[in-house]
Image 1 (cartoon, one colour):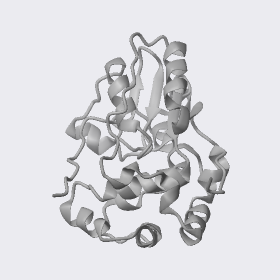
Image 2 (tube, helix red, strand yellow):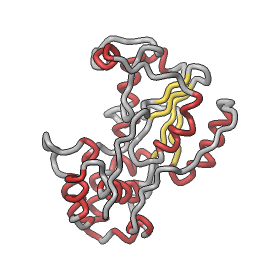
Image 3 (spheres, rainbow, N blue to C red):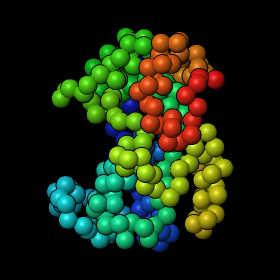
Length: 235
């Protein structure tokens, strides 16, 4: 019997006024595990009815009052805090090879918290999923099923990166250990707690691809390949 993921609560854009960092969470880049490791260093999220309303307003708010959702973009955080306040913090995010990232998303959606959606994706071959994933979003599509490319979360429309450090998923443990040391975070430890659990997920991501699907991902996520320095040739 398939197991479906439950809704994860409590992970917002993580801000620490004590250690002066902001962590922006791109979906399917070990962000939940990183959030668990960083949570103890961050400020309480001011999640009130008022903050939920004011987060949509264009006015700048102080750090202690600003409320953000888990996958809010760097641009949105800058607008809400104001650039001078934002630049007082060390900001970072994790990115992943788009070929690998897309397979991880596919496997995750097979276990999505909404049973109807999970069962729909389970019936799709990888190429069918890509066609669905890349089709125009309809009002009834789950947001997570068709989220934008990774660049959307950390760059402006011109491709300028808005965070101080881009951490490659492939070397995340080493990179974050260095960041923890830079920020003087005591007893920092990262555990990969949220790997997608499925038999298919044990396959190398390269095995999912044929020339057609490789071209689909290469073209659709061209900005991610270019901006983050990943090869658009499957290896």
